[in-house]
Image (cartoon, rainbow, N blue to C red; front, top):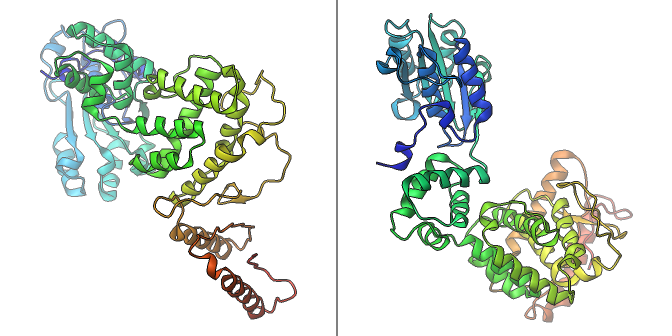
Amino acid sequence: MMLADKYRPRRFKDVWGQDAVVRQLSGLARARRGSHLLLTGAYGSGKTTLVRIFARALNCEQLTEDGSPCDECPSCSSASDDCLVEYDVPGRGGDKDAIRAWVDVHNRESITTKWKILFLDEAHALKPTAADSLLKDVEEPRAGVLFALATTEPWELKPTLKSRTLPLEVRPLSAPDAVDFLETIARREGIFYDRDALLLLACVKQGHPRDLLNGLGQVAGLGRGVTVETVKSLFAIHDAESLIEYFLALGTGDASAQIAAMGRWRERMSSKIQGVQTLLTSIYYNELLGRKIVIDALLDTLSSERATIVSAFCARFRVNEVSDLIPYWSVMLDFWSRARSTDEEAARLQLCLFEDLVNRRLEHETSEPVSRSLSRAPGAPFRRRSKEPVKTIAGAPATDIEPVGTGDQYLGPLHVRKIVNTASFFVQHHGQTLNAAFTVYPSWRARSSEASAITAINRFREELADAFGLASAPFARVCT
């Protein structure tokens, strides 16, 4: 038997990490009050399980102290399909005719139970006309009939339908809860485990109880116990290795190695940047401040790798104490607190600027004394200590970008064109202007024609100004 099936909760007390939802549902059950429900949240988080427990609890004759069904009274022992009628919207169809046919059959008072719940799973797949056809039924239900909807995409449901239900958010387990959950099941099953491996598994499965149990069963099925290495080998975790490699390159100031590490990391640039920000924050709190805070479950298992990164930065900046890195980390975190990527091109540009900061300017930026007390609240942006004005390109600090090789580069002509086009759209659409600065480094092959390029740019600038009669005060200028 699959662990997810074996350990599916049958009582409220068996549900992990959903205290608020459980309190509301058990309170309704104890008060014998029905309510239409809307359960939202990630897949595999327990929405269907909670509806099933609630349906049985409403009909139980001897509720337990926490409002759970007793599993012993006649109603529990003879529970029939009439207690809960489920409809999988994507699987059976979400059009009006299909929904109406199902509702018309089941929307009637039950003769075997006190309450009957009509449960629409993945309700976001309802067609608009089907959702509209349900409004009257939900507004004026038959005696003893309730509607429950579950969805991973609540924004797709019509507000008129959502407003007639009690909203309940079912969230994935937090990292500590997920580890405790896995540890409890592993002990019951007699599975040998390493707690760091459970933390890694919790990160891979993102706190979804069903996936957590399935993953635990998969790893245990290898017959070597649940270790960090078995989890890594089974779920092919490579992203973290690329991230660590990238940070080690940052620590040595090796631009080529940084580009190579990013090139091996097969994710969207915005996702890579999120990883960079997360690891920066994790190292700041755990290694530099000495506080045990789980920023990311996967990164929390990489304590030795994080220590190696810190050592690389200490060697580069010639500091003896880990805490001496705080000013440098403050500047790096400050950069990302101000940078806002809106698309992949902007994200690439921001990464270029970040690497330029770390590789060439980090020591200069931290030349002013920095207080070690760091009284700022967690999550608040770091203050920029430099008094120099900040120019911006695409929402990020503007600075000279060193040229990169023609083989592997973050920004090519297409990216620059995208940035220019975006700026042009902004002016046309909003009627506002903005300042932009580009520094273009010619390759060695282009230097022979540099003079002609400058002449062409000057001619273009003059023609542009003349075309709009603004020769005396040009609204656009290309500087050479």
